[in-house]
Image (cartoon, rainbow, N blue to C red):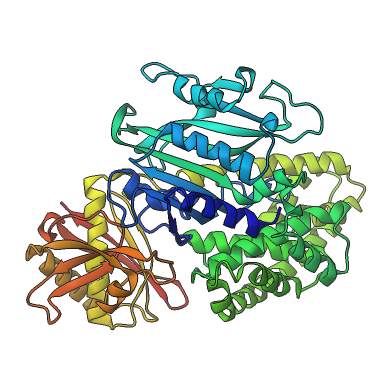
Amino acid sequence: MKSNKLRKEFLKFFQEKGHALLLSASLVPENDSTVLFNTAGMQPLVPYLLGQKHAQGLRLVSCQKCVRTKDIDSVGDDTHLTFFEMLGNWSLGDYWKKESISWSYEFLTQNLKISPSKLAVTCFAGEKNISKDIESAKYWQDLGIPLDRIHFLPRENNWWEPAGETGPCGPDTEIFYWTGSDAPSNDINNPKWVEIWNNVFMAYNKTISDSYEPLEQRNVDTGMGLERTLAILNNFDNVYEIDVFQPIIKQISETSDLPYADKNIKSFRIIADHIKTAVFMLSENIAPSNLDRGYVLRRLVRRAIRYCRFLNNQDTIILKTAQTVIDIYKDIYPELETQKTYIFDQLKQEETKFGHTLEKGLKELEKFSLEQSDDLTDSDYGKKAFYFFESFGLPPELSFEELSLKSINFEDFSKAFQVEFTKHQELSRNNSLGKFKSGLADNESNTIKYHTATHLLLAALRKILGTHVSQKGSNITSERLRFDFSHSEKLTLEQIKEIEDLINLKIKKNLTISMSEMDLNQALAQGAMGVFQSKYDDAVKVYTILDPEEKLGYFSKEICAGPHVSNTELIGNFKIIKEEAVSNGIRRIKATISF
């Protein structure tokens, strides 16, 4: 099966079941500060899972672009990817377990032609005050799944926690596919059983005290990873065999004049994954930098460059890989083609910058290999190899090859490097998971005030700096806001004070904030602003900060999912604490509110 077929089949199936088709949201979360990127299809829908009305109804389906960064160092194996597409369907207080389970079964067995004999499921085993999910198990049994293929597992296997620290959550039922050619085992722990789909039943709200309260609006949230599912359905033993990777692998082989085999496999995979992810990030105007999303992008591009240099030092691999990625996805995500010039310019600049660092690292490595002493242990060499890897981006394989010429035991040396590398991985993972706390995902009242303040901030920036200003990203917690915008010059102290004074004036005027639902063209015709590197659905919400003293009758009008306070006086006193550059042409403001 090909990617386009699976994507189309899934979306069409649920549209025929009354689901409205959502366009993929941006990779950058609009209202969620818990992560740098959208990591699941449900993430852009958090406000609606918490009870807000969605303009397109109670049943939704989408194919969402996603990026997950905590396992970057694992990319190159058979399963880990940084960029992926997540197929999902949702019920916002509409249907429940019976419909969700029966439709999943129908899609798998009728549309994908999977034999029911190759399916098994897991359900939540229950704990404390949360019941065992007998209901889901019964529906599976009614559909023909035998009892010995229905397994009850604990929280760590069959429970979905909220996207933030608080919010909607609940038990899930997971569907597994037998990948073996032999008769399926009844042991769900057999590695030939591979998860193919996850149906989450959001029946609870996790509070700040870690207790679970029943939700008034019960939601269904399902997720099926496109790439992983394709690999499973095609009986591939790794995700790089599917059609959205094979042209990239072929191109790298042709450009490097090397086969996709043996020691080259890992390098090919890393380059393919990282440049694909970089192309999607760049298509949304994210630029390489030393901060946040820009840092992740820079790390991916430079890691890809390192492995290109390891393949016969072919400088042309990066841009040819980027072009192949654009060719594969441009009909699905046209922003890749429209942003092609920017994508190529940024990749060229980063490759040039990093080239100088690499050359310096190679010289340092050569110097070290000549000066090495018998007093140095394998551990010393391992630490040194990690130093070259971390400081100059040299692949460990290159350091190993150079230093092993000095009769160093390769196996011991490699183990010593891995010890240092594992420490680095754990630190990176902890930093990633703990980077942001709270956020709009929890609907906390102070966070909503900060979110509303960003609307005032954008309007003030456009009034004082000029209408060229547009939003390029935001990060909102219950303690501060961070707002990225297009502007090429550093703000003066006078401009910062003018922006603050204007915002606080509008806050004190107790301006009413109204919300209207309309189609996108109508919103644009009315002058509504939005994050226009994002895609919007046909029906949108428009929040207007009304001000009869303004010429248009309002101070701010934005396409936004919400939520917001009802009037500006509820926000508090606004204070800019920092203004800085993020990348070329992009500035950042950090601000706080005194409640």
